[in-house]
Structures are given as structure tokens and as C-alpha cells.
Length: 256
Ligand code: 13P
Image (tube, rainbow, N blue to C red; front, side, top):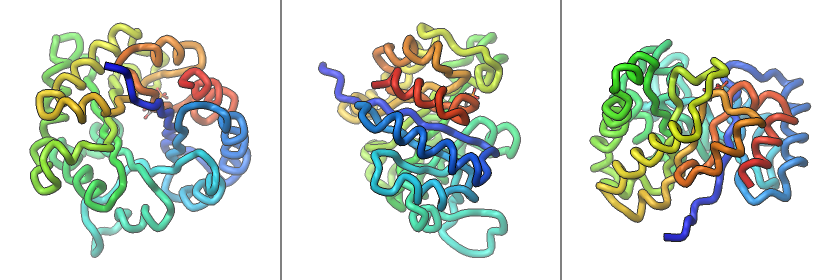
């Protein structure tokens, strides 16, 4: 079948990004990517969402959040709701980034609840999945990913079953490749992406064919081209290299 998926490159700034970075980086990337045949997404911390949103208004770029509350409103100190994100122009939110899972203790069930809350609000969740080094070395990569996907599938009933995955995005980020400079090889990444697509195809083959699956973990301008050339890799989720306009723009270029 003809590949129909448009590539997406998303920059996850993590806990970086003061006004100076927004003012310097965003207009540079917008200008450098405006003629490319792909989509660009900035994922700054909550405190920079309004400023980035303003900068990307009337451009081809999007803004998204790094996480979201599963609760709609109320006494949840420190949380940010889907409605607040919508007010700031967010079209996307990460859910289940490995740092949220490992440092802040988010379980598969917590991540699934966030996925559901985002979907119900009209924000596309980017579900992050990935195995630890220990899981990879003991041959448990597929079981780990399967558990992470299944937790989300289990909550989809209230939004039309597998249809609830329509428009959502999965990001495969092997934990051992995040921030380590040790990226998965193109073959390793492609194998897991194909596995994810096959798992979703068991629920609905059309949705699986359209599902964007991003790769994340030490992507830079040197390795992006080979990764993005893989059949089931539909773009990237970029950490460190998304904080430099030249590097991030070059990675976007590699996706177009
Ligand atoms: P690095 O690109 O810095 O490895 O981070 C990847 C990541 O966690 C993006 O969400």
C-alpha cells in the first residue's frame, strides 16, 4: 500500500526554555522550515506555551504540552488541565514520557487516563513507549511495549474502541537511548516500529496504516536521515537537539 503518512518532527524541550530561548529559537526554526513538506511541533514547558503559541500563530508549526492532567478541573495542586492547554493553542500533548514514568512514578494506568482525557478534549496525545536497557537485554522489549500499548487500548471503549486511536501518535523512545548519545540503530528502531504497527493492526488495519510512529532517543542531524528513511518511522521526538535552531531545522529537513 502507498505510504500516506506525513512526517512530523517534534521538539521536546523538557525543563528548558526561558523567554530568550523562545525569542531566538522559534522564529529561526519557523523560517528555516516553512517550505518543507512535513510538520513541525514545539513542546516547551508549560510556562512557555503562551509565548510559543503566539510565535507560531499563522505559521505551519504547532505547539504542544509535555504532559496533562487526567482530571478536568478542581483541587489538584500543580496540575494543568486539557482545557487550559486548549486555551493556550495546544493541539498535542505528550503522555507517558519515560521521565514521567521513571522519575514521577506514572504507571501505565495513569498514562492511559491522560491519553483518554486528551482525546476526549480534542487534543491529540503522543503516547510515549519504550523499554529500559535491562528489558532489552533480557529480551523483554516487545512485552514491555505491549503492556504500555495495551493499557491505553483497555480504556478506549468510551471513545469508540480502536477508533479512539485515530489521529493519535505513538513515540517509541528506548529509555537507554534518551539523552545518552547512544541512539538505536535504524534497524533496531524499525523493528520496534513495525511491531507497534502490527499490534495496532490487530485492532484496526486502516488506523494502523495511518498511525504516525515517531522515534526518539539521541536523534541528531547526522542520524536523522537514516532513521526517517525507515518504512515505519514517521518522524522524530527530539530532546537535546531541539534546543538549537540549526540542529532542529536540519532534523526537520531530513524528514521532508
Ligand atoms: P534526547 O533527544 O535528548 O535523547 O531526548 C529524547 C527525548 O526524550 C525526547 O522526548
